[in-house]
Length: 324
Image 1: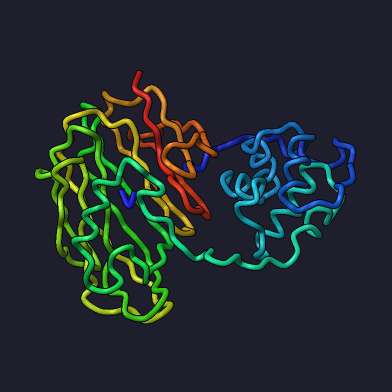
Image 2: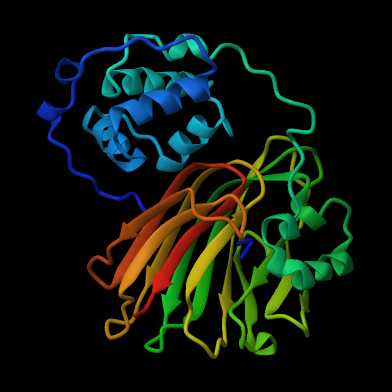
């Protein structure tokens, strides 16, 4: 799927969170990521537990964001991020502002706006992505270069055989420059899928354009047209539905994120008689790499599991399904 964290409910006793329990230690002058990593290692807590301590203090932050900060892939810069860093100092037993002073002004490196291609993130998609060459017009449509994806909600319906039968997607995009009038979706399915029997329906804020299906891989690309060009900075909401004809049980659903995304909600509705043994929320930097975030999810009433991702960076986000 242009294809992206379950907000795992973690419990922490507020009384157990506080610097009074931990001796404060000094942070040696060093770049922010290194100092944060050293503090996390010294504290001996996983990122999920640190996130739970922050939540007990009323501070919400995605585990993936903490991981990105720790590895220097992103940098806290907004006022809200600075509030999170100050709360981190308390949770990690550090003196006030000892991490904040290491942040400093940040300059965007050359080429930072470049969006990785889909094959860079998902090498197994190369054959499907070659179909994008057939949708090279209108100008700017391929690669969605004129648009930023702000928020996405994907709702999947699963069958009693454990396969995905329907994907209903709602997307909010923002125009980076004037004239953006459509969005190109790349969808890759499980091996064994009959792509000719997979159908696309534009349901709101768009109409279906050209559709191209791969003959050598279970993939397809299609256009969703807005019927007008957007002004720079304008947001647009649209929705579409895919009805699938997969012949095998699904092992995962992931959304590929090619530029920063504010929020992503993924919901899977299972058949009551076919619930996986485990559902795992994951974030990967690329397809072949181990997850940087891996959290168990638990189906709730109605046999539905939800994964909520906040402030996503470039990578792959979704849910892995383990059936046995």
